Image (cartoon, rainbow, N blue to C red; front, top):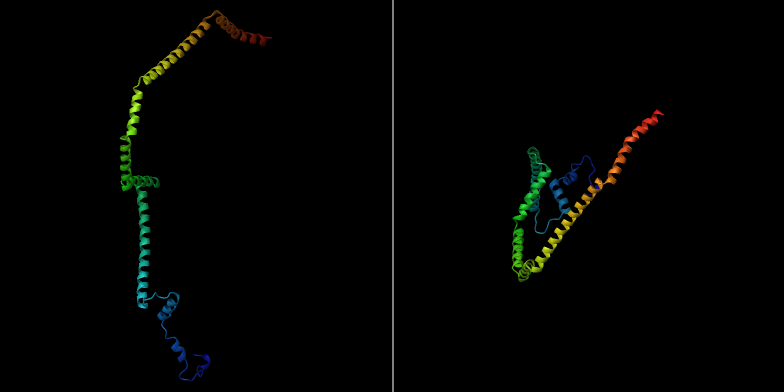
Length: 208
């Protein structure tokens, strides 16, 4: 109602009636109107059904929060138990890797792959090309040329070893002969006399 048309007579029995009528709307209706304006209901969904769904959604969200808190507490408890058992992160990682590898080995994909590789290996081993190559290699190792080559290499190795031994013996004998020669002994005697005479000369010099 227009404020100008309101009864401003303080003694009037109708004073304030317009204001009282405007406050009769409930808070729920106001909230519902605001909510409907912001989020209109889908077609075919009544306000009562929407309110039930909102209530159920609130309960589910509260349950989710509760479960999160319980999970967090369980995780802290598990960490404490591992600490008491002496399970370090490295040991836990090793255990996880071992378990993961065991899981891989028992998985269908791994088993099928192993079986397939076994089939391929069997096919290759039984193929004509593989058998022909094996037979050719066997013939080569039993051939006269191969045996002669092996014997030649073995003889060459033996001769080389004998030659090196002979050279070493000759060098040793030559050094022994040089050491026993008169020239080497004369040189050795001279070196000995030099070592003996040097301290005497030093003492004589100090006396002067």
